[in-house]
Amino acid sequence: MALDKAVEAGRPLRAVLGRYATGVAVVTTRYRGHPAGVTVNSFTSVSLEPPLVLWCLQQSSTSRAAFTGGAHFAVNLLAADQRDLAVRFAGPGDRFAGLNSDEGRYGIPLLDGAVATLVCRREQVLPVGDHLVLIGRVLEHWTTSGAPLLFVDGGFHAGPDGSSNSVTRC
Image (cartoon, rainbow, N blue to C red; front, top):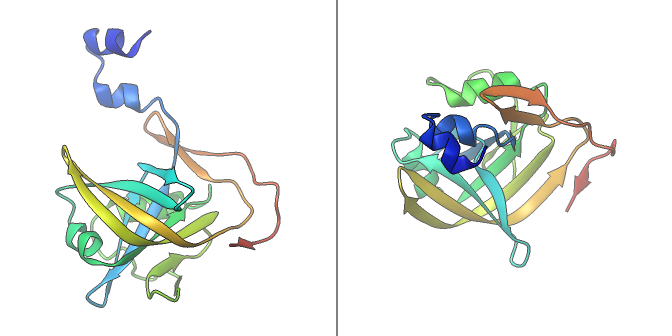
């Protein structure tokens, strides 16, 4: 069924878009001495040269000031066994309470156990509809082995396991 036919049939657009499987990331930053983080599945590469990525944040997010004011952020691509982190960073409260995380050279929280991490300098923030599009220049990135966490049809799933057993830093 074509997208326009599904919408005409009364199926909500969100359900149609939910058919597209995505990875799950927690984006973290530090602003005015305090850590901030949110769960997102709207993350993608923009350019390899220069190395740019983007992700989207709801305009009404309580973390808006941190991400629009902080100079750097990290995109932590979650592992299949990190569903609890995805839920934690999607909800209210102190998202970092009791959590193991390291701080990289830019002072932002880096989540242990992520299958990949990209440390970025915020380049641009664009208001688009009910979201902000945040574009970052990748300064550092690394991967580890393991299956990524995926989100499709409103639920979490394990992706394929990586073939490497080592950490690759670039």
